Length: 221
Image (cartoon, rainbow, N blue to C red; front, side):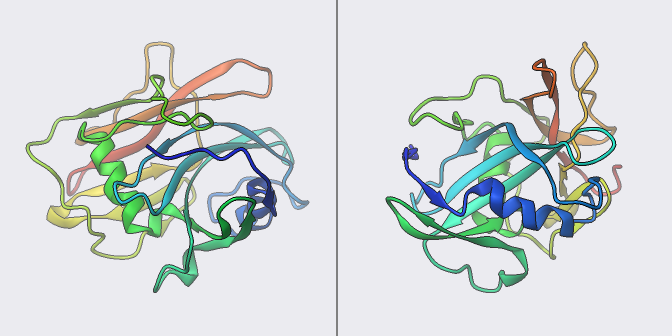
């Protein structure tokens, strides 16, 4: 299990995201600097114990109305070859030293573990506490066998999320702009082979639940 260190990060994750989020096509904020708060998320374990994997939800209050975003991040002790385009920034970790933070949609370790979560081979972990499963994260899988984890092309952003193309015509779709699901629960799009859902805090203090990621077969929308 990943160990959560209670230490200081310079700059902080929110400080890194304040600079990075406005460069994304799915960002909905105003013209000024984002005003970010941490609203939720979870972690996954790297089986090799080398890469930190975090799915962070942040809420930005700088626009006409608050917007919540899902930001998957990986933390590495060295640069990831060929992924300079996905670098969010670097931090100094009080225990681990220099850390490179990447947009996890471009990191093969995160993609593999997200698929493992969808398929029931991995357990979501609490965002802030070591060795503690996050029971609020939901997942489903309707497929037969494991999906190969390697990306067949670069992950592509649009105005709502990120598509991660996989082998055998499948795509992992990450919802970047989060929207609360109906009271009956998240509705999966037609053709979905699996999903991950989670919860986050709204500015008024209530809790929302929605779709974080969907595994789609070729041709499904």
